Length: 89
Image (cartoon, rainbow, N blue to C red; front, side, top):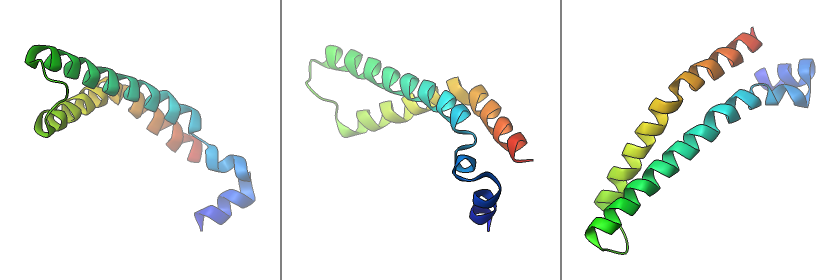
């Protein structure tokens, strides 16, 4: 199996190959997503003078923020994937 092969050839370190590129992609994604969501939420609450978002608006903002995060980090994801697949070959 792949687990045995990695363990025998690379040891524990082999299971963490690609960790750096993954973090380099995930960190900006998380920052973009949460910052975007929070900005939209703050603007909406100021406009509506409410204390919390209704479920429909929260879901809409969450999906939109995730889309913005994906679009913003797509090039990093391509680099990460290529680095990981090249390391495996």
